[in-house]
Each structure stands twice: as structure tokens, then as C-alpha cells.
Image (cartoon, rainbow, N blue to C red; front, side, top):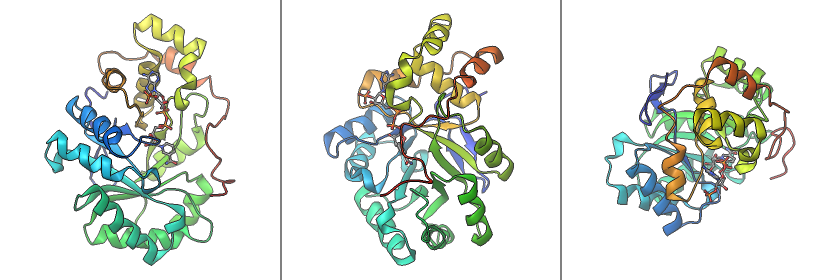
Length: 276
Ligand SMILES: NC(=O)c1ccc[n+]([C@@H]2O[C@H](COP(=O)([O-])OP(=O)(O)OC[C@H]3O[C@@H](n4cnc5c(N)ncnc54)[C@H](OP(=O)(O)O)[C@@H]3O)[C@@H](O)[C@H]2O)c1
């Protein structure tokens, strides 16, 4: 059982990644990003998930500095954007992200989306960065099983993480089992379905019975399903409350009730059909 914000999962290369972190999609660069990141780290978070396309890496870097926690205690993720995919362009994009974040290595670098005809070359660049020690772990995002299969045919190093849309309306059972079998850690994006699931009646009922909030129930459900989770908030009281999930455990029956809410329904694009 995960018992604190600092608890980690061990990736297949031995690197330890926190089960819980802060997402910063749609967080504005500058003080909004810096304040969210600083508040999160000050309240015990150790993992921050950004991406080049979020255009807030400078603010995130600022927040990291302001928090004053030593770099080796933190776990910083960024992602290469679709327009930068390809070998040389990915290497350049990695340098640009590090520069904006003002740090000298990343803990995790992800291919943001499986761009057809490009992602294998992009992966080769990630492998180079990994072998050079410039990133401690490499992975993918928004990969279906068939994307992973295609990548694994060419890869020298297996991805350590697959970050995908995952929440009670999209439980990704097959993908989760596949990743578990392959030793690839699944990570949930939009774990709260961008807020929509907080109004779900079943989740609300379960929340009442544990005297917890709907968000806390969903985030606890992620961890009990062995899925890393990175809820986003810019509000300090929510950043603190979202992480207050280590003093209770959902029963097997309640886990099943939440699992049964699956509708294979996305709030974001399907990785088989995106046009960006
Ligand atoms: N790899 C990818 O393609 C991809 C795609 C999307 C997201 N992500 C990552 O995953 C992270 C999380 O996903 P997300 O940001 O899309 O959605 P999310 O975490 O499911 O939901 C965030 C939304 O919920 C609100 N919220 C957070 N905690 C709440 C609470 N306790 N009560 C009520 N409302 C609450 C936030 O508002 P406030 O900020 O106002 O609190 C925000 O509007 C992102 O930030 C990003 O790092 C990755």
C-alpha cells in the first residue's frame, strides 16, 4: 500500500518514480506555474509533470528553485512535442526544455503522442539521451498496445512509462494488463476527467462513506490500481487536499464499483485519431 506522497514505484531500470505528482497542463507560465509548483513541493509533492507544448517550463523551473528542495529529491517530467519529432529535432527539443526549466537533467522524458512514421526515430533520440545520462528514464504517452508493439520491435530500450488518459470512465483494462506484463509503468493523465467526474453520483456516495472528497476517492483508486497519478490544480487548498489520500484504503467492493463506471469515454483525443 502506498503510504505517503514520497512513496515510489520502481521503474524497470531501477529508477524510483513517485506514485503521485502535480500536473501543469493549462497552467500559465510565470507566477501561476511557479506558485503551483512551489506550493506543491512545499506541501510534500516531489513529482512535477510538464511538457514543451504547455509553454510553462520556465515558470515550472522558477517554482522548483523557489521551493528550495534539493534537485535529487525531485522527479521532473517533460515531453517532446509532435512538431519536434524526428531524431535531431528531438535532441534539440530536449536541450530547449532543459534550458527553460533551468536544470541539467530530466528524470523522465516522454514522446507526447505517437506521431505516425516519426515516433520510432524519436525513440532513438530518447535512447541516446538516456545512454548519455541526460535523462534518468524514458517513456511514451498516448500509446495504444499496437503503438507499443510497433515501438518494441525497433527499440533497444523498453519504455519505462506510458502516460495515458485514465480515469473511472476510461479504465483501459487491456492496456493496463499489457503494460503490467511488459514492465511498463502506467501513468494517468486527466485522472479527474478534468473535473467532470467529481459530480458522479457513485463517486460522491463513496466519498461520503469515507468522509473524503470525490477527487480524493478517484486519486486513491488510481494508486490502488497501481497507476501513477498527476492531478492538476492551481489552487493551493486543492493541491494540498488532493494529496491527502494516504490515511484510508478503498475496499475491494468500492474499487469494483468504481471500476464498473467505465464507459470507454475520453475527454481528450483518441491516439488513433488526432490531427495535431
Ligand atoms: N500526456 C498527455 O497527452 C496529457 C494530456 C492531458 C494532461 N496531461 C497531464 O496530466 C495532468 C492532469 O490532467 P488534466 O490537467 O488534464 O486534468 P485533471 O487533473 O483531471 O483535472 C484538472 C481540473 O480539475 C480541477 N481540480 C483539481 N483538483 C480539484 C478538486 N479537488 N476539486 C475540484 N476541482 C479540482 C482543476 O481546476 P483548478 O486548477 O482550478 O483547481 C482543473 O480544472 C495535466 O496537468 C498534465 O500534466 C497529459
